[in-house]
Length: 172
Ligand code: GNR
Ligand code: NI
Image 1 (cartoon, helix red, strand yellow):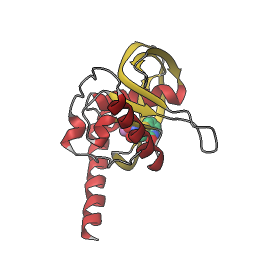
Image 2 (cartoon, rainbow, N blue to C red):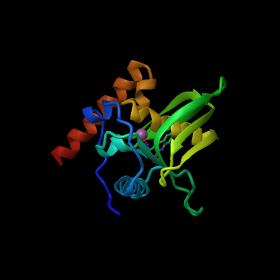
Image 3 (tube, rainbow, N blue to C red):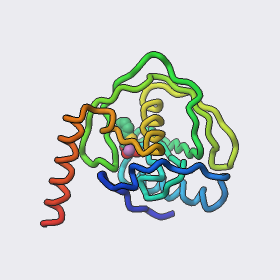
């Protein structure tokens, strides 16, 4: 397995709509495993292929807490089948928007269809943090970041902070 570099906003590759995969074959399983290693190392609880510069509809998630057994989810071509009328608010962060956090409102429960790492069609119903993280990753496949759900005032504040912290890194 290998760790992959994670793109940071405002990288234009994060704004692209990702392309469906034909099937989950060995090279794609390898990508999923490299994404999991990258996500665990970050550390993060989800990662979408566009965040590592791969414009494919692939994502990985593991919301198990530290000390709990790993529970990796690997998905290709995920499709939302249903969302609840009820919403939930979570404070979100993103590995492509480092060290910035904000409340985002999304449907509280969802139903999803996807191809798993063995190219089998699966369905999953999710609520709580898992429902939020899945929707955050689905957004990445559409070129949408969690800051795109905020007011332009909040979004621009975060983007300014990001460009400042990047400049101070370059200057160091
Ligand atoms: O690690 C992550 N934590 C997180 C917390 C709340 C809502 C969504 C997330 S996903 C994020 C990792 C990431 O950027 N995935 O795209
Ligand atoms: Ni993210």
